Length: 225
Ligand SMILES: Cc1cc2nc3c(=O)[nH]c(=O)nc-3n(C[C@H](O)[C@H](O)[C@H](O)COP(=O)(O)OP(=O)(O)OC[C@H]3O[C@@H](n4cnc5c(N)ncnc54)[C@H](O)[C@@H]3O)c2cc1C
Image 1 (spheres, rainbow, N blue to C red):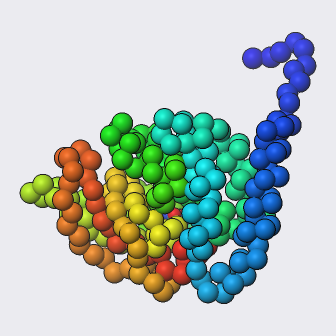
Image 2: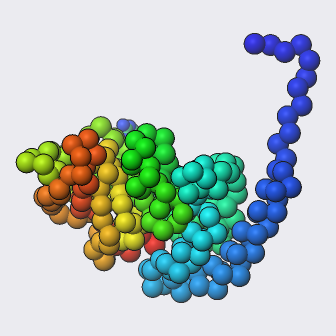
């Protein structure tokens, strides 16, 4: 479609967004910056800072209030990620992955029951979600993943291994294309390209919504990946 007259578009941030950016910049400089180098050296994620970010509502920015969110938008989330990344990219990707990879798929595609159960605590920052796509054999070719999920006598049997999954050591719940929703409340330490394939049995809540555990590697990579 061609317009016969010029259309002016306003790309400026609103005053609210500018105020928000200033507040996140202050948080990043005062709270995150003094700890960043030490956390990098130790390969640790400062969970007290992540908890504080949860209390600030950052993990719920783009989600409606009915799901524990702030009713804001993705631009505002991007402002937060940008300001955090200016100081510490590990903290920034923890927010990005928690919202974009962990919570958002449940918001977009989950059932109401799944949203209440997982999205609400994730949006409130009480639970870190993650997304387990990549495997030791590759990550770009999503269709070639080898992990399988099989329902056996009311339990899901998950068989496979994952690598480079952000927040794995800390995420309470993770999901992957073959394992619609898995659970993990901690992971192996030490960095490696992947974990050995494991076979895990998990009782399913309902046939259509398994609670699963899959092997995943957080390791030191979970500081930055
Ligand atoms: C900081 C960080 C955080 C991450 N967090 C997560 C996460 O939370 N969850 C998760 O699942 N994964 C995560 N990953 C993994 C990331 O998604 C993978 O690294 C990525 O998908 C690439 O997979 P790979 O490293 O196995 O490389 P490969 O897929 O093996 O690709 C290797 C190279 O081959 C090229 N290539 C691949 N396929 C083709 C093709 N068909 N044609 C041409 N070239 C091709 C690629 O461009 C690349 O250069 C993270 C990685 C990093 C670095």
